[in-house]
Image (cartoon, one colour):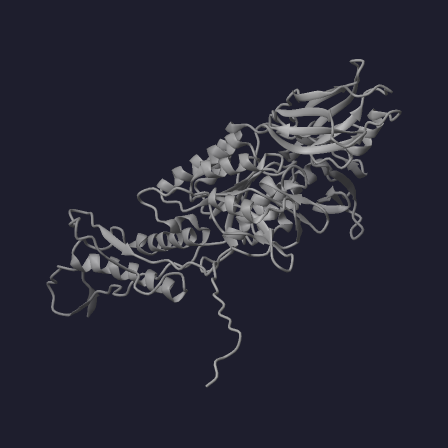
Length: 584
């Protein structure tokens, strides 16, 4: 007879007894990379609840095409393989439609599943295949998103049949409820619009304004800022050194953002001249309030009446979004705003979950309307290897401009999707054709010293990442200069994450004795060796017991020594020439 025994057990009967155990090491955890988190606004979709998206085509289906859905799209363009997409917002109302019976009574209420202004339509009609069957179609334009077939044969309660069909199918778009009971057939309709709901962020902000006056003191032109928000632009109108030419200067924080020159010669209508000269402005829009043949009055650094922030940029809404992402595993986060208060809160969130063992980074950006020197100060103020600050932008082949949060989202995808044994330095930006702000060597160096990631061009005019750095500019006592590089931070985060994933299953499963501790060391060394093979760590990476902290009770301390491999990013060549070779 054969039977099993446990350690220490002594059987009463003679016989053969067995036990088995695993004497191998746990499997080495692989790389968990390529995952982004995106917080954005849209006109449809789950609100405040993250959804895992595996390709950018799914974004329009799940979240519509309004708001700032370009954030997760840019992450996918950058190389993300999965995005935990989270629609931001509180409130809003869903769209509705009243289905009527053949007597004209409203018998069913269609309520869209999520709040938002996305436009849908609805069709109810007999099917071509079966005269005793009808269908309800939910459409976006001419595309049928969902179809519900229901029994419409004589004597059947069509209302109950349609309700059952929708309930059985678990619709992704609608909820259906009975308004009043009806035995009548349902009325057919063809692509009738469903009344759209409202978005959580319908109450937008306002842009700043300034009224230009003529020499008689009458307001003749209104300047409106392109960007909403409380931005203290200034206006200067003055003659130039050129004869018969004046200029309109838009400034911010003592820095000139834009100069628009216009004719002020005698007999010229200056209102018309300035309106025509301003059409290519990137900061302001001019609109005529009244015509005037008088000269425009001069102004010296006069303040705009500032606008207001969009109410959608609620810190509380972003805080709730961050909390919803906390339990998920992702590598890089980007958001849909350049609001510095929200960006700062994002940094605090990343720092907090990092202390709890989540190895993540965040990418933020600011627009070109912010003076370059101000952007430099903002970048260095973060001083954090978890924060990548994107300070410039680019334009794509269609003329679309990518700055601020859009450029940040592309870089977030680039970081997440690039293996840690590769650098994003000089990595081309797919689809980019030119820089929004070409920088000289001096300003590129200033950006690097300030911890600002910028875009530059190759010798072949390809737009690429200038240097793969984060915002860390001043290291603490625990950090070396390697923490300033995105590549090296990724390797270090990966080592810690993979070591955790490998040995976590051994917690409570091995004894705190020499054999148990050796199992931990061997498992950790297996991770180190794997990353050496993957050319992420130099040979010699290893784990050992911390001799300064003796094991005690249920605790043991270990040291991991690792040299992560940097990319070759600075090459120095010395050329040695001579007039002629020496004769033998």
